Image: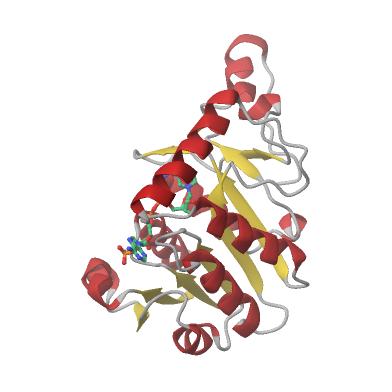
Length: 238
Ligand SMILES: NC(=O)c1ccc[n+]([C@@H]2O[C@H](COP(=O)([O-])OP(=O)(O)OC[C@H]3O[C@@H](n4cnc5c(N)ncnc54)[C@H](OP(=O)(O)O)[C@@H]3O)[C@@H](O)[C@H]2O)c1
């Protein structure tokens, strides 16, 4: 992995991913809205910035050209299929064979085998209803974006994040194929570690065509068992 593009680089997750990629010695490119370029000021000498909306196909085609990997933050802003447009542009213009890693939430399901809690189900309904009312977000846009990724023949991974919190890194999160699996019981991940998992996935071929649901390695139920019973945190296939 030499050259990596981060799509939505100026957000909280994006900036953590920029840092992790630079730490690994990658050549890093970032796409972000023109008005947010200043947020990347601390990295300005180490990063090539492509200003523009992440669903702007011309911007994405230039930013991902020649990249070995693309890290894409999917956020369903507005009611104009922003996340879907972003995902489609990356799928269409990333070089064949590039590793593509996308972010989303636990409400995304790949095979309908997830056991979503009633609380999360209600949160999704509420977000859908509020989004329609305010026209600020469109949960179904992220669902459609991920459906297109799952259907593509690219080398994709979709990383499904739990609730996020700020704080120092605890290490690589653990993951499982299905929400509701015991290891994911805590539903909490440090944002810096979500970014770490996204970046590590670039070089983990076992995660190709997987949609790992993740939680922090110290808050996972496996690590809690470790305190009591000696089991180590598990990260199946990671
Ligand atoms: N937040 C959570 O608790 C949570 C939980 C599970 C999964 N996730 C997933 O984690 C990823 C990152 O989420 P995050 O909450 O941590 O956010 P984030 O990293 O701060 O990213 C938000 C992104 O949205 C962009 N944005 C903000 N307003 C916009 C607008 N009006 N139009 C277009 N773009 C806009 C931001 O760009 P600018 O820098 O230009 O503003 C930024 O790149 C997402 O894929 C999300 O589904 C989040």
